[in-house]
Image 1 (cartoon, rainbow, N blue to C red):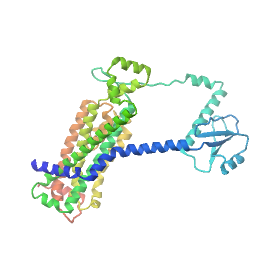
Image 2 (image 1 turned 180 degrees about the vertical axis):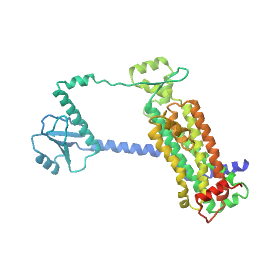
Image 3 (image 1 turned 60 degrees about the vertical axis):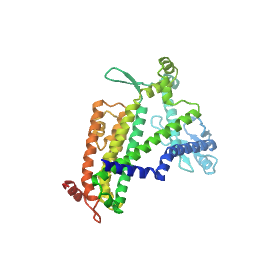
Image 4 (image 1 turned 180 degrees about the horizontal axis):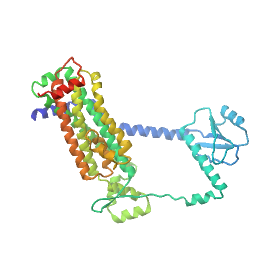
Length: 436
């Protein structure tokens, strides 16, 4: 155990001391908000500096009037289509919308002309406006006043409340649960790939430089592999914790500077029943705070740490085995497919099944099978998972980690000292069956 601990220390300290680690750890929490801030600033600048775009409308039906917006203004006149096209070609109009005579029940032939391809937002804007106008005209021709329809239209909002076995009611929100599952699942997917590849690259470098031959003279190959995996896991966990602290600190500073409260502070204030009732009655903020207060942050955090470490350790052992079997990164590609396919399945299943229906049979199996559970289960945890399912998933993940570590250890023992050969799947299978 002491030898494994020395390897863990070596892997951890060597990577944490690198300037690249410090730069990535400190800059990453700033890069993405900065990029988003720049995009928002550019978008606002474009909106402020963008000239009003005038669109000429030729309506052969003489029925439809489109309201102008901040970005687009509609000009109506008695000119024909050829004259309207000439205005576009001369640069006097941004575009020309032609509404020919058509059957009100089957509007066909509406066209937009412009010197450049219209954006998707413009086409959508025109289609929505025309659809609304055509619907109003059809109601009018049917003897129904469109104003009456608009008056009776009612917005319905359903509050989602979860009941546990004891009858405790918890307010939830599908959008919030989706966001938590999305972020947690993607983070685990990224960390497994990033740090798994670091393990593989590190093993290949040590093997090619023959450093490993010196190391295995004083400790067993399995101890070296396990120490390397756990050491890099510590690096990843350290980086994640630093990011959480930095993001939390920056968020607190920014919200404080802008005179706002953190959601946690607002949720704490909701402990006052009178205040909670007042806010719930006067605005939507009460519902939002009830949702935030109902989230089990402890369970989500502990689950994330467990699946982060469990998923990494499971795949880290496989990446270490691949690294030990080859002499160069290019040779590792043939063995990467069986490892990456379950990760891709879990990634796609997160969006197709888990986040859309976390209680489905497919979501259940994705969240209990060890190769996919680290990503899939984090997509379900925020929605609420029965304890037995969570325990089953965690237990199987531990078994899966032990199994992959055993398999990787069999390959690692032989592969780490092999040079100049390109093993096949058949060769790896022989190494696994070898008793040594």
